Amino acid sequence: MPQDITIKITDRKGVLHEVLAPTDMNLNVMELIRMYELAEEGTVGVCGGMAMCASCQCYVLNDVLKTERNDDEEAMLSEAYHVKPNSRLGCQIPISEEIDGLELEIAPEQ
Image 1 (cartoon, helix red, strand yellow):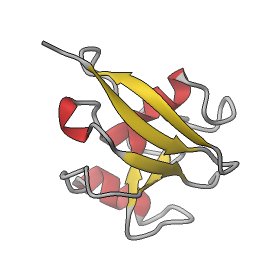
Image 2 (cartoon, rainbow, N blue to C red; image 1 turned 90 degrees about the vertical axis):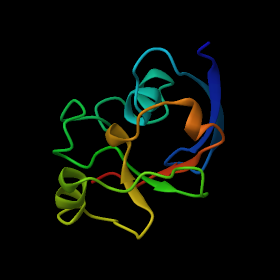
Image 3 (cartoon, rainbow, N blue to C red; image 1 turned 90 degrees about the horizontal axis):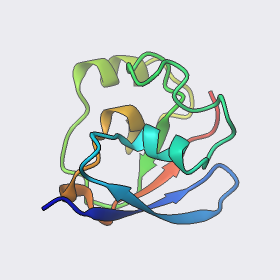
Image 4 (cartoon, rainbow, N blue to C red; image 1 turned 180 degrees about the vertical axis):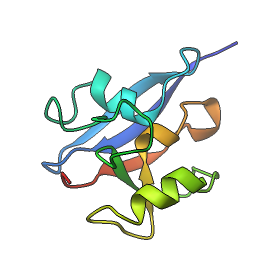
C-alpha cells in the first residue's frame, strides 16, 4: 500500500522544511518543491521537468538516494552554475518509498 514519505528540504534562504511526499502520485522532487512553494514562483521547474534548464538543481545531503545521474541530467549539469559533486536535478528524482528520509538543499538560482 502506498504511503507518504518524509523529505527534508533546505530552501534558498537556509530554512529547513520537513515535508510529506505522496508515493502514489508519480511526482518528482521538483514538483514537490513547487507544491510546497519552497522556492520563489517561476524559479524552479522552468522547463517543466524535462532536464533542460537546471532550475531545480538540488544538493543531496545524505546517502538515501541510490540512483545515479542519467545522461540528460549529466549534460544539463555540465552547463549549469553552482554545480557540486552531489548536485542532482529535482525533476529527475522520482518520489518513491526508497527515498524516505532524503535530505536536500535547493541550489542557488541559475
